[in-house]
Amino acid sequence: MLVDVHSHYWEYPEHFSEDFKRQASRARGDTEVDLTVRWEDYQASAEGCDKTIVFGGKARLSGLWVPDAAVAAYAATQPDKLIAFLSLDPTRPGWQDEMFEGTGT
Image (cartoon, rainbow, N blue to C red; front, side, top):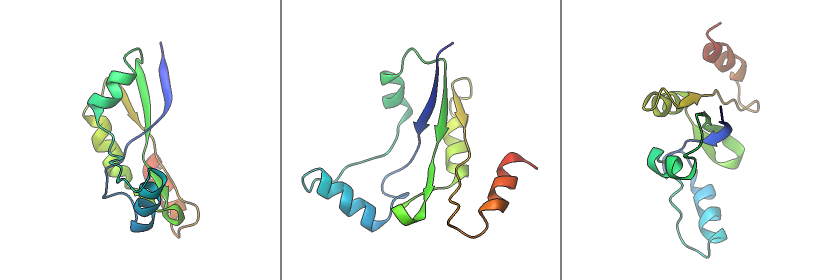
């Protein structure tokens, strides 16, 4: 069994701050970059993977914030292939509560 243990899910522009979008555009020669992850695009590049663990990302200081519910909804579209994985930002108040909520304890 082949498992991709680190893939991402996010939607552009919803999950990114204005500053992040400006920096990403500047890094690409002032061209806006659609960072949305689409199942069809991912699948085309990972045909041999049996399972894929999917992270969103929570890094408020970096300008990225993907709610775990969005990652879970994405994983639910391909339940035989995708496994949603919780993300935490330990710089934010309440991250411990999110951890316990996400683990069901």
